[in-house]
Image 1 (cartoon, rainbow, N blue to C red):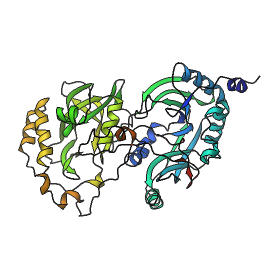
Image 2: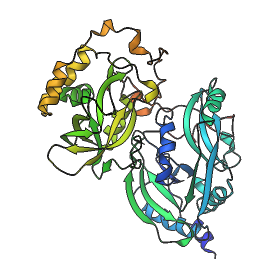
Image 3: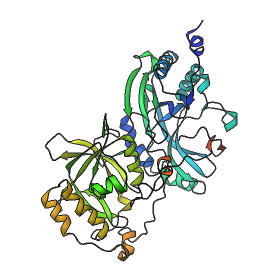
Length: 440
């Protein structure tokens, strides 16, 4: 009896949409992927960049993933590492929107890899063959955005010129899982290709973020085993705002400074953001609070911070400890309003009240108290325009389940970038498919 036949005789496990086997790109190509996904992909907060191979997959309970990883190791023992390049943009059509994805220039290697896995796990080959969802063959892809049906062609054409593509070596496959549909995935086990070592437990939760500017930090490093560090500089330095309005429960909070940046009020509507400081700026550091959030709370916060880009930086705690890698929410440069417009009295008041609560640096706190403000109703057109006068429309909201099922929570300035699972799934390019292949 062959090893593969023996493997296939293992009793099938329950498969769920909270588990998958996938390719995770090497971290050095994450920044270009994440910078496009962060404001366009409804799955950004929960799914790391990935190419799914088996989804849904066995439920992660007991020793099921350990058993599966051994089975994968044998199934892929003769599959050697290979390089892939993803440069072309394409899309799947669903009932009310489209998923834009990056396709492989040559999908032979990934297709062969998926075939070996499908033979070892025939009960999990939903992505390879499912007539009920118009799926007749495996279509490897890396999801990038969700776009309205009427805009998708123009959107692809606009982005294709600025999409440099990514190239990386596929060295291993990952078994990932999550506790609930609102939680980010955790990379549980990786299995090297070609018998180059046995399965390795990783247990690394995904952290949704983008490398900041020229920073050498790689996406996904702003976490420790307890959760994700967030550097708050605006309303979230206010204790009541964090715990009461937003319902967040930080595991730990520490006052800190972010060097090389300055606080400005150039976010649409006159809200706060941080920008890289320049020679001659009054402040060349931002003072704020490092909040260590659970992964679920971080996802909720990121959903609330509509129109901000989660970037990874290093902040220095006041207590003299080593710098901490953290996520800071930054307004994209193309979304900034002109300098010099005062913030609203309500917003500035949250900062002025929050700064002494920790307390933050005395000089910085005094500076906040000295700033002018304006009533909400007196903001003019300049608060909603770029410096050259172009109208800045509200950023299209991307809905996710965590906000859809928590209606009424976290309704700060960001609104709900809440995500609700949508019906309609993935088929061939341009076709409408059923629901069970959606990456929820």
